[in-house]
Length: 328
Image (cartoon, rainbow, N blue to C red; front, top):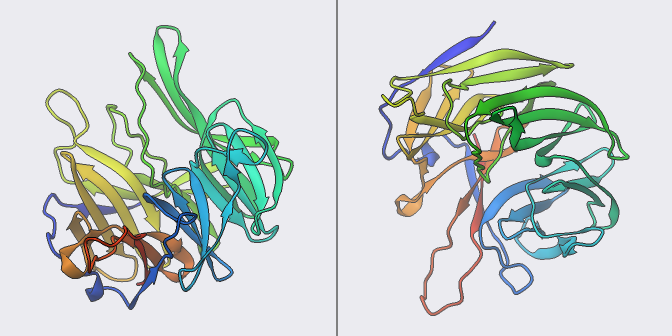
């Protein structure tokens, strides 16, 4: 049975994260020539270490005190080298890290030993482990089919040798002209209570609202949660007014990051009570800074956010941002 939640146009302009959080911990990341971060794109935690993706195209490893340890891989075009990171995942069973860089999938040990890589005939958007199986979400944008251009995405199962072994179609969109869009902060798959949930966003214009979270059962997608956004959802010209970027689920909450009329909103709904709130730009922390929560450990309702470092001296060298660890 599908469950529907209503999201109104009204939003809270200032809701403190401290009012909902059980705990908030800040990690100051060491700043050096080797560890400098321009923009944190993704964070994962494994065996007392934070694996941090920088938008500049590198994965840096820090401990729980924020001390820098090493960088995964190196910059370049050779084996084990890359310039760009679209997604990565840590397989706790094999203790290997799988990194997607464009059409390439590269495997390392968590201690930074290069293992294997392979190129695919499509761009890889996302990498995850589902039921001990490596999966990737990928596809093509602007593929010419007749007089149309097609954007398509599928979920592919991948063997330890990085061979494709199965697939589930996710998106197939026909357009009159080549159009594509990406969002760097991707939370496509949620893993909670032994179930796997998926939301694959479409960031280009289309005539439908993709407002449903699905559960993955074998090779079937089962709709489970629908987000009912207050109208209007489209302009008079037929353009999308609501752009859903992420929908994910934790043990206790449903969360959605979206734009309406170009403005950023963040919705969170309790799975155990009637509590829900629609936030203008996100939660408020100190100094009225707004932050968006992203998943760290959904089974235990742990999330992270990125906080700019507060300067005490403007002549001081720019410091790395801080990671906020939140338990809800």
